[in-house]
Each structure stands twice: as structure tokens, then as C-alpha cells.
Length: 112
Ligand SMILES: [Zn+2]
Ligand SMILES: [Zn+2]
Image (cartoon, rainbow, N blue to C red; front, side, top):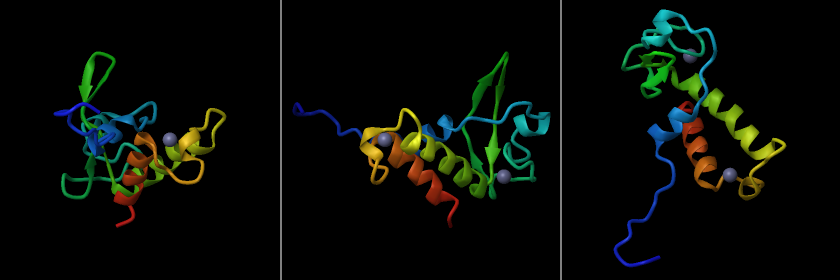
């Protein structure tokens, strides 16, 4: 590493949230972030986590989800990452790579 280079902290939590795939066929209120994109329960800015604005087709959407759903989705993504056919070699024992540790952080968000 050369002097003056900032240390990369891996994938930030907002970046990791953007990596969570959204379900298909979302309703208008889901796209507006008024209900959880995953379970459809009503959410507010206080009770939910912002998944980051995304582009869907021609529109910009502002999906939100409850922490429990984010945790569940992150567990799914992490198991694909660690156990799938193209499993990450670094994360066989525990999630240690940038993506693995970011997903692990999302899982813990919902465990509060
Ligand atoms: Zn939910
Ligand atoms: Zn990994």
C-alpha cells in the first residue's frame, strides 16, 4: 500500500443494502416505501431501514424494509455467497470478505 492511500473499509452498510434483490411485482406503496418491500407491513422512517433509491424501469423508487426482513434477506444472500455453487473461497468458515462481512452486518441489524 502506498503512503497517503486511504484504507478501504469494504462495503458500507448503504452499499450492502443496495445489493439486496427486491421481490418482483411490487405494488405502488411498496415502491414508495410506505410498506416493507418484503412482507408488505406498514413501515415508517422510524421503524424501517431505507434500502436506498433505485431505478426500476423508467422510475426511481425508494424501497424500505423492516429490520427483520432485511436480516432474513441478508441470510439468504449470505448462504448463497458462502454455500452456493460459486461459493466464496474466503467465506467458507465465516463471512470475512467485503461482501460476506457486509451481509453479516445487515443480518445483525435485524437481530436487535
Ligand atoms: Zn418486512
Ligand atoms: Zn466472501
